[in-house]
Image 1 (cartoon, rainbow, N blue to C red):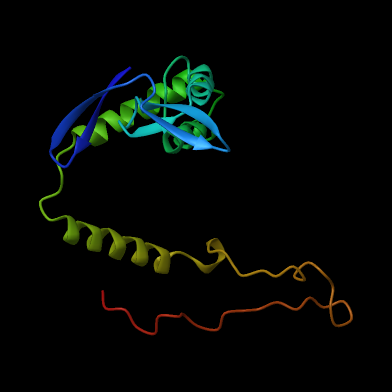
Image 2: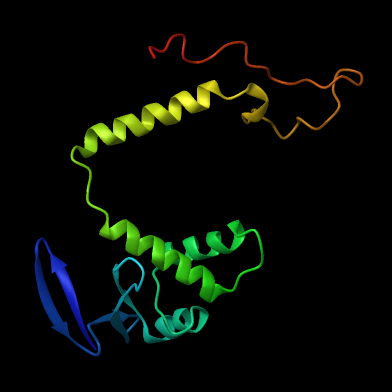
Amino acid sequence: MSTKVRNGGDAVAITATAAAAEVKGGVQIEVEFAECECCGLMEECTPAYIARVRERHGGRWVCGLCGEAIKDEICRAGRRISTEEALDRHMSFSRDFLSASPPANPAEDLIAAMRHLLRRSLDSPRALRSTPTSPRGKEEDNGGRRSSLARSESCFPSLAR
């Protein structure tokens, strides 16, 4: 197996069938480098694990994070889609994301995104927000009345817009 590992800006080629071997209880475990076909993340995995992941994803190896994104893609689809179609959608998203140019000022973009998220959450109706619940919230208390916690005011007394 041949692979490339990025170290800073340089790419170093590693050729190995057993890239690393661990000793665990006196037994050597063979591990190989595997590169995610979606995001390019490199991981050390056992050959058996690599085979299981490839079997689940049509011969392609994907990292755990991309695997979860593929599961989420299947759940979010309005209709029943195959794992292969969800994988193609996620790979397309990853390709578009990686090819996009980075923002001119990432710190300002992050601050603007957080400001937008905070304003959107504060402007939403209270009924749509989640409310705190306790394990006893569903029980009847005080002679048939339910006791609940109510928030009297915002945690943020003032926000400049």
